[in-house]
Amino acid sequence: SFLPGLAVIDTLGIDDFVTWLRDGWKWIVAAIVVCTAAALVYSMAAAPRFTVYTDIVIDPANLNVVDDDVFTNSPQRDAQSMEVESKMRVLISRNVLARVIEDLRLTGDDEFVGSGMMEGIKALIGLGPDGASGQESREIAAMRALSERVEAQREDRSFVVALRVWTEDPAKSVEISNAIVAAFEHELFRSAAESAGRVADNMKERLDELRANVTQAERQVEAFRRANGLQSSVNGELVSNQLSVELNAQVLEAQQRLIQAQSRFTQMNAAIERGQTASSTVFDSETMNALRDQRNRLQQQIGSIERTYGPRHPRMISAVSERDTLDGAMNREARRILELARADFVREQASFDAMSRRAGEEKDNVFTDNAAQVQLRDLEREAASRAAIYETYLARAQQVAERQQIDATNVRVISRAVPPKARDWPPRKIVLLAAGAIGGLMLGTALAIWLGLWRFMRAPRRDWNGRPRQAELRTMA
Image (cartoon, rainbow, N blue to C red):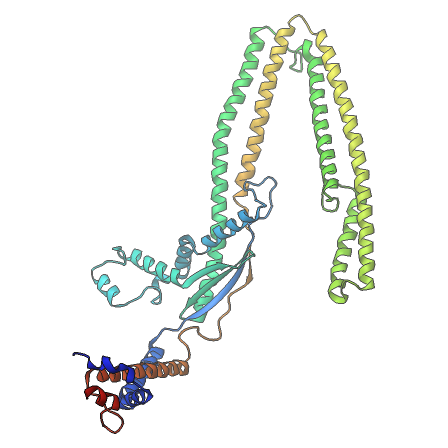
C-alpha cells in the first residue's frame, strides 16, 4: 500500500522518536538559526512603541455658574454613566483628533503619513487612500494613524477615563496626549456654546412674536378707550377707576408678597423636614451664618483628628459632641427663623384678604360706564401680562446669550501624561532572541518528528542496529 507503516504504527517506541530527533538535528539547528535571525532582524527593524496614559475625571454634572442653566443635570446613575460614556466618545472623536492633527501638523509627520510602496504608487497618480488627492489624502491618512494610536477606557464604578496614546517617540506621545485633552475641553465648550446659541436664537425669534403681541394688546386698549369715550385724569388713569386701579395694584403687590412669603415658608419647612438646615441658604441670619462657620471649622478639625488619632480618641468624641451641639443650635435657629416666616406668611395672607375684600367693595362705586371700565381693565391686564412675558423672555434670552461665553464643563485632568521609561514594543533584544531560539527549537523538533514519522510510514522499519524489528519479522512470516 501507499503507507505500509500504518499497519504497524502501534509498534512505535521512545527509541523511534530519539532516532528521528538524532537524524533531524540539522533541521533543528537550521530552525533555531533561522528563527533567531528573524527575531534579531525584527528587533532591529520594528518601530518602537512608547505609550503614555492620562487620567481624566469627567463629571456628568456641569458647573452651576448660572441659576436656571440651559442644561439640566440628571441625578440618576444610569443617566450619569451614559453622559460620561458620551463624553468619552467625544474624547476620541474625529472632531477632536482633527483639531489635534491641525494643531500639531501631523499631516507632515512621516509616522502618521506613511511613505510605503502603495502610498508611493498612489502619490504618483495623485490619489490618496480613498481616492482623495493632495492635502485631503494626508489628513485622512493621519486621521487613521492617530485613531489607531489613541484609546479611551472608563474605569468601572467611577467617572475616571484613562486616555492611552502611543507613538514612536516618548515626547511626541506626551505632546499628542496633552493636545487631545486640550482639544477635548475645547470641543465640549464649543458644543455647549452652540447649543446655548441655538436656544438663544430660538428665543429671539419668539421675542419678535411676543413684541408684536404686546404692541397689539396696547393698541387694543387705546382703541377701546377712544371708542367708549373714557377720559383719563392727569396721571393717565380714568377718574372713575383711579381708586379701583390703585386697589388692584395693591392687591397684586399683596399677592406677590404673599407668594414670596409662602414660598419662603415652604422652602424652610421642606429644608427642616429633610434635615438640610445646615446647608440650605434660605435660613439667613447672623446667628445662622456664625453657626455655619463654626460647624465648618469644627468639621475640618474632626477630619484632621480622625486621620491623626482615629475615631475613638477622646478629642474625636469631644469634637463630635460639640458638632452635635452646633447642629442642635442650628436646628433651633432654623425653627426660630421658620416661625418668623410663618408669622410673615400669616400677616401677608391677612393683608391680601383685606385688600381683596376692599377692592371688591370699591367696585360698587364706579361710574355708570362700569362695564366698559371692567372690559378696559381686562384689556390692560392682558397687555400687562403679555409685557411681563416679553420682558421675562428678553431677560432670559440675554442670559442664555451670555451663557455662550462661560465654560461650565466639569472636566479635570488628575494625572497628566509623562514620558515612559522604556518602550512597550518590541521587547528587549535578548528577550526576542531567546523567544526566537525557543520557537526555532520547537519548530525544528516538530519538523524532525514529522519527517521521521513520514519515513516510518513509507520505508521499511529497522531497529537501532539496522535489523528488521521482531514484530515485522513475525508479520512477514
